[in-house]
Length: 356
Image 1: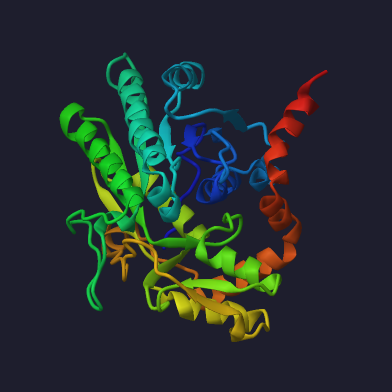
Image 2: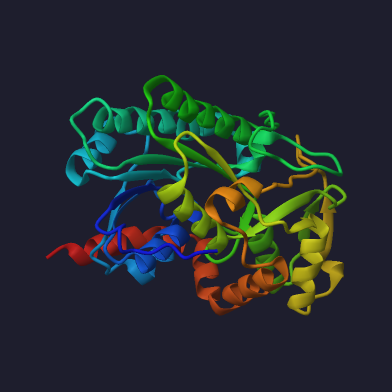
């Protein structure tokens, strides 16, 4: 894959929403390193999954501006556009945990649908309805879950009909349709990326891989839904960041790009790999009642992004899972703070440092 150069991409401003979460924070770190002349305005509401400690390595970078706030706040979003004049907007902000969407669907409508519509409306205001003359793009980071569930064979393609099976995936599918509508109706330059399951550093330990690592380190029971044979396609988060970078700069207007790792594994296989790597017994596995509406299999065919933009995953699962486990072993203080809630105080600590 040919490396993007920074020669002709200097001095851009990217407005990133949800940039203190798992994928968002990895992306912010990746972009600041790759494009030293880019400015990133990072908005995150710092709900339970937003963690400013993820961004410690860039907190002193003058090109990284953090703002605490919600994407449903029209006045705030308008003010960010007015003040910072972004070239690009990348929307990572989302409620994303399926179990939480089953317990409280309303929160997912507010953030994932209403928030997306607010971002689109203000993007339209500044980029289309004003005298704006620069390069711009709105990029929606979505999920393969909008396609529903697959049988034992086949893959999701960009043309696969949307068939979400949980309140979470329904809210993401709705947001995607709003993004498409703003392109078709108003001509807004947009892209949508739909990724498979991400894993890697800084992932909140409610998701499968960090949860199982955390439980195994405590010698606690590892809860596995149903028979454990649900299949997911796993994508290392750094590979996802590279894909988003390519789509941001070179994706064709209005297009959707599926981003998959070609690393299909059953949940129980994942759990057993983690136990083996940590030298823990399989007797820790505890099968529990299956999740409501639990999709059986996801698998993405990323041929389009490979052919058009030259992307393919560089980290295979066997390498990525070892890197991920090692990261959590080396960052148990981060894990401890997340589990006991101490990470929530980090924003107040940073604010106190600025008071003279």
